[in-house]
Image 1 (cartoon, rainbow, N blue to C red):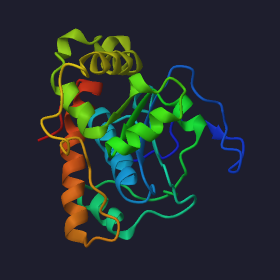
Image 2 (tube, one colour):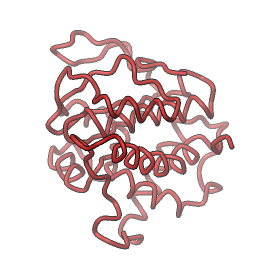
Image 3 (cartoon, rainbow, N blue to C red):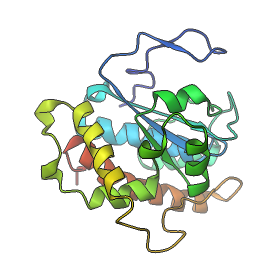
Image 4 (tube, helix red, strand yellow):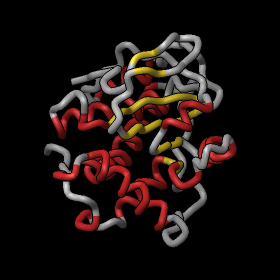
Length: 223
């Protein structure tokens, strides 16, 4: 189940990249890599797929998932090997076009998840008070695993409220729960690599996303 534009509002124009009609109560997740044709598209579409699998609602309770690249290939299609990885997981790759990361993407994001620490630093260097809501994907996973789900708002309060609380809790833990190695929080770039390497990266991303989506929704993955 895929809803590429669910909850995203309507573009005023492709060139201006501004929104109208955005739901008031929404939580935007922005995945960031370099070219926005490999890692961040895989992460975006796997996140959407996991949310739809758990919630069954294409609007995902106000959660909006998108991606961009620090050197984004604006308007470019996803890499063919990235599409193949998504197909392995039953996720939909259709309708994707690459985007260059802009200030407004960071401003509007409630949670920014990057492929590497360099990407994280680039996002934070753009300003917009992004530091407390920007993590590498694997860093955020590590922090989320340390959060007791019972301390988060109940689902009855809504997914947006729960998601915002999860980000605050993860930010509070960041200085206390450090990565075991310098590379532990990195998702390496498969661009130009064979399909086997793309699949290994897809497996890493899928494994990192599972506890994040479970914490966001309170619903474990189907077995």
